[in-house]
View 1 (cartoon, rainbow, N blue to C red):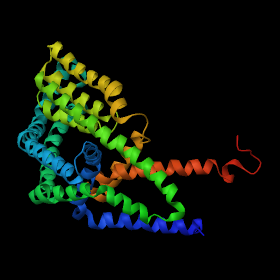
View 2 (cartoon, rainbow, N blue to C red):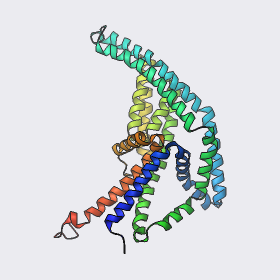
View 3 (tube, helix red, strand yellow):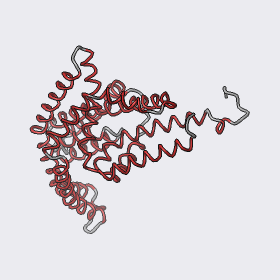
View 4 (cartoon, one colour):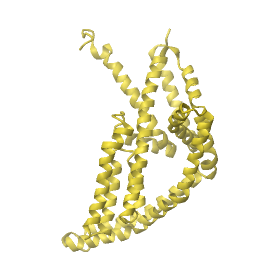
Amino acid sequence: MPLPVREQVTYWGIATAVFLVLLWWLGDVILPFVLGGAIAYCLDPIADRLQRWGLSRVAATALITVFALVLFVVLALAVIPTLINQAAGLIEAAPKIAANLQTFLTERFPGIMDEGSVLRKSLVTLGETVQSRGGQLLNTVLASVGGLVNMLVLFVIVPVVAFYLLLDWDNMVGRIDKMVPRDHVDTVRKIATDIDNTLAAFIRGQGTVCLILGVYYMGALALVGLPFGLVVGAIAGALTFIPYVGALVGGGLALGLALFQFWGDWLWIVAVAVIFQVGQLVEGNVLTPKLVGGSVGLHPVWLIFALSAFGALFGFVGLLVAVPVAASFGVIIRYALTQYKHSLLYRGLDRDTDD
């Protein structure tokens, strides 16, 4: 006889509360394990495909791990230092950019840029604030990354965790399936499948879209000679994970820099605008339909809220688990709404099943 609904809600509520408390309490301690699990989840389809091509699970996992480590080393040596230098340079150049904007506005709109005007003071303050706060932020991020994701984590713990999780992924899923209460196994399997489909479409698909667009923006902006083009392209690509945000932030930043760099040479300003326009056309008509698919049930507002809330509560680890948790909640809520619409509470006693 299945447990009453009230008791089931109690048990699942306690399990959820324990998970959140452990996430908050362990914090950065579980960071390498969360990273390793995320990597294993993203690479599991590749391992499955290699198995279908005739490789054993061990050989497939070893091949993927070696390739991933080589790729990471190349990025760490060739790309990341350049991005850090450009980010620092952009922060240092903020006062000069604000001064150029002030000069531009003074020449064309002298009435609103009089000495002592609010706009003039705001521009000066903005440049100084970005320089001071931006430098502090960059130093804090680098210091925290150095403390949390040290060499041991990067080169030993995360690859080892990812390797063993990827190696044993299918067995772990099977063991978890055997622990599901038998009265609800079909429902849990359906919900779990929907969650997996949502995550696969969004994390793997949208992650690939971010990578492709990031490389495209970085390369294209560097080719046109835009200052700090690499870091602007990286920002635009990373923020593409949140629909519409990447194009708005990256495009606005790139066009702003292009106006100062190429003022009077409109061809290059138009070229920067075209770069982002082409990126959006390719994303909307090719990349997203092919890699992400249709609606995955993660509304941009819901995603932004999840990232903000989990980041504030649980730090960097919270940012990593925000999307899976948001996707899981979304699937569960949609399932609950479907059950509600088929219930007597919604339909009433006098409604037939076809209403």
